[in-house]
Length: 229
Image (tube, rainbow, N blue to C red):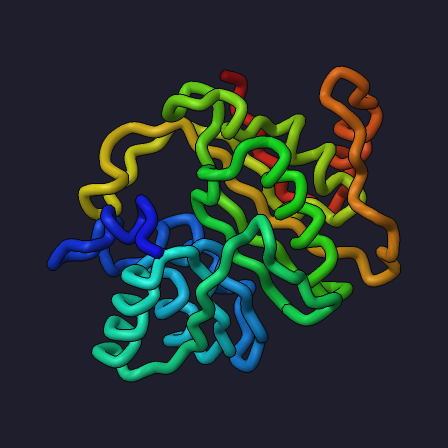
């Protein structure tokens, strides 16, 4: 059945362009050939194809058949392969400890309950020692305020991972017609601890323990750059 994303992707060009997200590209030093990667809501494949070009084993999932078809065509033109899977993330089965890396770039179609399920899914499917690379809109971004990220939300959600990088900033993005101009962004890189077998915290924002944020930001190996907004 056609959905809104099918309609948005039904165009000759690529809605968000064919180049990778700039923050993802800046994290290339963390990638190793052969890593198994889940590219979440990968759309027309710009990020999944770029990851495949770096020798990674990519599973690209999205709810749009049109987007996935364009992803396969982009991969063909670039001379790489990736697995594409049509997926409703509300029903997606997150395979335990399957992926070395999860990439989630602008997955902010998700309201809070679906976001919670996705974040729990990231915890489930990443191998111990594996990575999550994520960028999203922060406060001051597009409408639907409950879809936006805050640093506190990400620290609470991934505070018992090793937070390698966390930064809120205002930056210009140029990603096709879909993303263009000054944007309020939050970047996250988190590593699932080798000993981590705990479920994702479900504590509500109103009950957040500020000590969690303090512990995360105090880790000597964490690259946490926080911009006051």
